[in-house]
Image 1 (tube, rainbow, N blue to C red):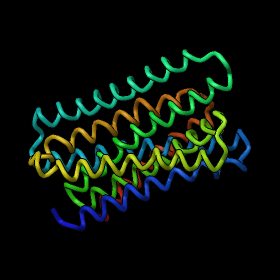
Image 2: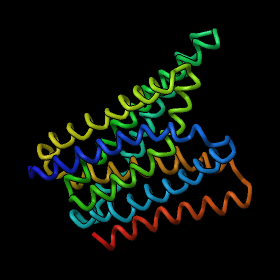
Image 3: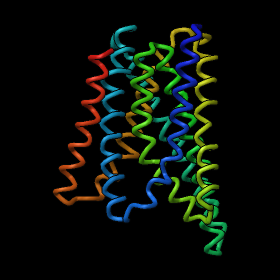
Length: 254
């Protein structure tokens, strides 16, 4: 395997992991401004994820293999597997959360489980980044950008949960960064097993697209549906379109 694929992949997940520090920037913002800012970032992230899945990742898989039933099945499997992973994390969170009765301990437990869930999520991000770099460097770069836009609003929320759970600002940043580094494990695993699997463009690539579709439609869109104010809804639609536009621009550049 070309050395540049390893270099680009590792550098990408390191940059994505460093995004974990952006949460501290939310401290000076007032609650209302913070909420609106994060909702716009989520909107932009939805557009970037869906744009990457439908404009970059799936077209690459189809170009290599044709629009086969296997492409559709592996895309659906990506959606299902990401759903199962998230369901498992939430079940574990609820189970452990119910074991504690004291308020402070309950908050601490919720914060720790958030770290675990975030670590699993970052691991899957690393897998997606690695898969797309195996196909081509431009596709890997576009996917990395989509992941970065997705991580920024999430890290604001994760940082807030850790502070709420009793972590100091320093510890919250440190443990959030450790959780983010699981992306490095995911990308290394894919770069090792990808060539062994062989025709990963027909298996792992549509699987990665399915994961992005799930994250955008299941994790992020419901957050926007909670805010039905017309002005905010227009801003959210603009954010989604802006995210898609960025993916289109990257497509034309690539």
